[in-house]
Image 1 (cartoon, rainbow, N blue to C red):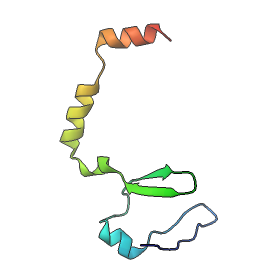
Image 2: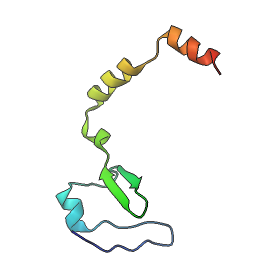
Image 3: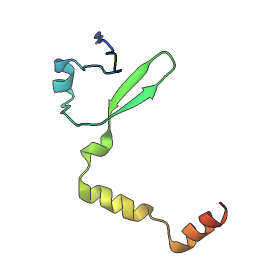
Image 4: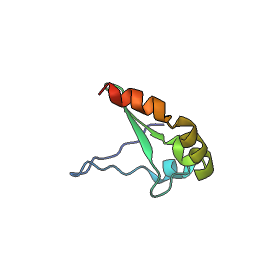
Length: 76
């Protein structure tokens, strides 16, 4: 599916309504932009599809221990 959009003077584009509906994009949704040389790819950000509780569990699992934090800070 090829669509044409125009870049505004402020660097903004408007995604076509049919595309927004098909991808269930709403105001405030976050997209990830990938620069692929001669292409720009926009993808819905998957983090927006997880609950706050799921994200909190991941954040807790990713926390550094005091020992790990001290080791890293000592290298700075």
